[in-house]
Amino acid sequence: MAGYITDYFGYPIYDNSTAALESAQKSWCPFLDDTCTKNINLDGERIISGACAIQQAGKDAPEVICCPHRLYADNYQMLRDVAKLAFNADYPLASGRQALINATSTKGRTVAVFGHRWGGELRLPKMDGKSNYFVDWILALLSPEGHLEDFCAIEVQTIDTTGNYRDSRRALIPPNRSKVKSTVGLNWENVNKRILPQIIYKAQVLARESRCKTGMFFVVPSPVYDAIMSRLGGEDQVQKVGSLQPSSITFLSYNFDNDIQNIGEPRPLKIENTHMSTHYEVQQAFNRAKLPDQNVYGKAISEALGIQY
Image (cartoon, rainbow, N blue to C red):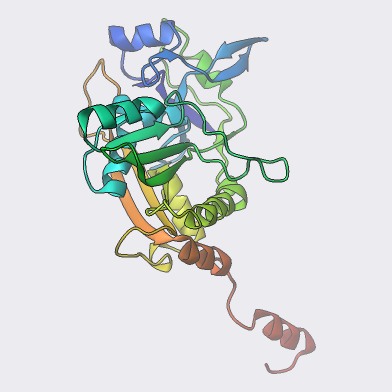
């Protein structure tokens, strides 16, 4: 396996603007407006990574966002996108309890956000000592009177890497900015073994919540979405539903909008896929996907015995 870093501290590696170079020099994440939180070992010391996206070596290989913070571009536009889909309106968003204050003071519906650097974590009880049903984000719709009307969950997933991208990272140390190959790979199998079962389980938990009317939103980079749908047998094998419901799993995929590239600014993201289904349909597709042809065992036995099946 081999690949490259293509998006670095929020900017494409070919961007040599002052803003891009300063972001790298300061190890700054423009999406958190804070220091990048990812670290790697490089030349015997622990340094900040800065890798936002990886591209495998090979013809037509896509860029794949590898850091979830990259999906929080444009001041967490992803949260506003999900809120509009879930609640069918552009309600204002606010952190946790501040949303309650805003709703009651303005007499207008407000979405309370609980998640990364917003509103703190919800204090959920662990089951068997584990927190395997916790989600990344909760969006809660509050009435003008401050009552909980509805809520939905968001799970954000990018891609884990294999190997390492030290050589690629070393080639980007200021003032250099070169595209250099490293041994980095992308762990697509993790999508099959871990991510899908977790999403199905969490969606089942949410379906039992009396005030969760729109289920779960699963936000991923577009190449990860493609890998998930391939594992499920294709988009046509994951039946769509016409409206959101408590058992919903809504896949929402984002990709770089390379039609809009302004040097000195992070590349914007665009929604490429919205696929509304349910945990029942996803579970069924997961169970039946990648099955061999019918009667493969019987035919193999017959062949071994030299008889007709």
